Amino acid sequence: MIPNISLASYSFHGLQGQGKLDVFGYLDLLYYRYRVAYADIWTGFTPTTDESFMKKIREAMDERGISLANLCIDGPHLWEDDEGKRKAHKEKMLEYLKAAEILGAKTVRIDFGGDMSPMPEEAFEYIVKTFREYCKICGEFGAKIGPENHWGWDKSSANLIKVAEAVDMKNYGHLFHFNGFIGDDLIPGTEYALKYAMHTHVPANTMPDAREIMRRLAVNGYEGTYSVEHHSGENELIRVDWQLGCVREFRYELLRDGIDEPKPDYMSRELRKDLTK
Image 1 (cartoon, rainbow, N blue to C red):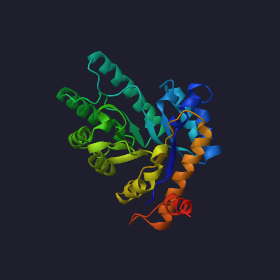
Image 2: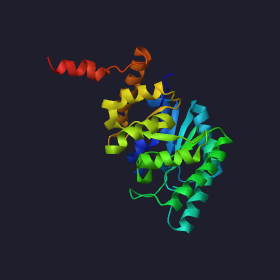
Image 3: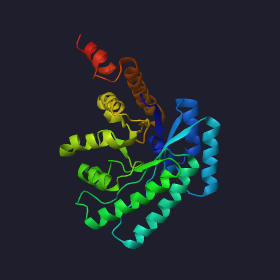
Image 4: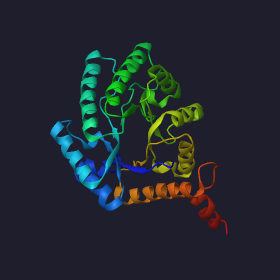
């Protein structure tokens, strides 16, 4: 199976930050401009977790035939050294999990916290315990939950593998941020992500590698979506057109060529050949 495509609302964080786009405008973009049926809502677009507001978002999604591939939660990460802050983060996260259920989220992303220093044993035990609690809650409405390899302790393949093995629950997953692993983490991190991937983020700067990563995910039985995520904060409407077009083309090529063997993408096979004439 070749998974479908979603479009992350973070791709329009520049417009959102200028007050020019809200979550309902984002859903209109998916439906009218980009013709994408799977949303990926970043919580920067949800100023409140109020139940009535979430129900309005769900109604707008249903009216447009849009499903929520991922609720991407920033703010309440799992670990803070201060116990009071840690408790506040958990209380907020529980509100977001209620919102995820209302919205029909297939996956939920929340980060470990921390930085690039070693993860203390106390933090590890808390993260594992809390993720197991969150997995049980998400399991009640059929969602997966996990971190993303994009900052803090989530960037370390060793941390990710250790936590995943300790949580050991079927609906624990990972949001695979393409090319988010670097250096010595590249191979073990990629192998981990291919195994645990529940959702993806496909940034613009990964286009030279995206087709092959998408192929490897499909080979590994990935069932989420390929989510286009743009980061520049500038000229977003047009840049997302280009980025989404690339991912759509790669998906088409995989549907046409199959996923069993690596093959060069259109840009490698045609454009680069033309440049050498």
